[in-house]
Image 1 (tube, rainbow, N blue to C red):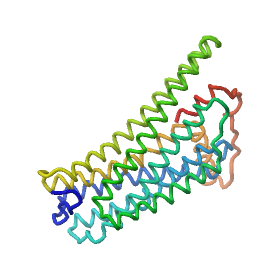
Image 2: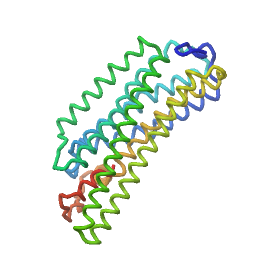
Image 3: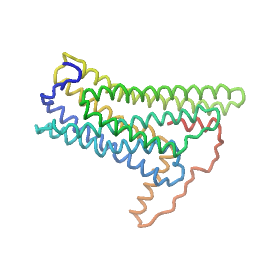
Image 4: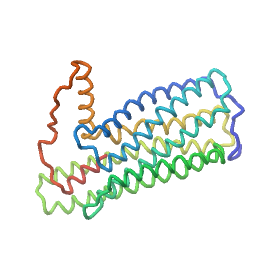
Length: 325
């Protein structure tokens, strides 16, 4: 086997693999679509008037990319592998599956990189720096333009060359960006705590230490999920391309699972960047309560938002809280 050749394309995938991939794609579809629809709905409606920020616009862009994955890419995987299991001819349709996958996965990863960059610029600045909403919108537009243009190179290079380039550019670049950003964010938070130790009381220090630990856990979890899903996918790509002794069944299993691991990351993003944020959960509760009120009584019941009864100072503490995503 040599790099760039049509590895095992003349061999049919095992029946159990086709069924497994189709089943897992259905599960990922069920997880991905409803959650990301709710995230988009929450940001557009913004019932509590607290989601219109540059960071959340980038979250919206990530949710749109993952939603398209759930609406187009994952159903195409289901159809493709069901047809494969039933022994229909599918190889002439493979581009229809691959191109949407690369477009949405590229947009999703670049959105993650943009989110890490936004947090880095906000938290590590020595003065009140703003990443404007208009800049977030233009960043999102640029992400989609690049993702679409780059993915159509697939038709010129073929699957194996393109997936190799994809693994060594988009995936590695995103990993480097989020690792660098989160390390610098952690260092900035730790520096603020050390400086505050001599100027603040024990109670304030306890709160800051709590925020630092929460931020650290969040950063580690985001990196852990990204590495487990996308770096493991890259490893599978290298094995597929450079393993000269691997049987075709092994190649087929690795090929399907390197796709599935990236799709798992798309399904997990909603829980990493939106569902765990209090502002989003408050918006979800309002939206779902309003929907329930319309169905149950035919009219809207009054909803009082009591989440802003306290006051928060615009300080390092606010920066730490805003970085815990």
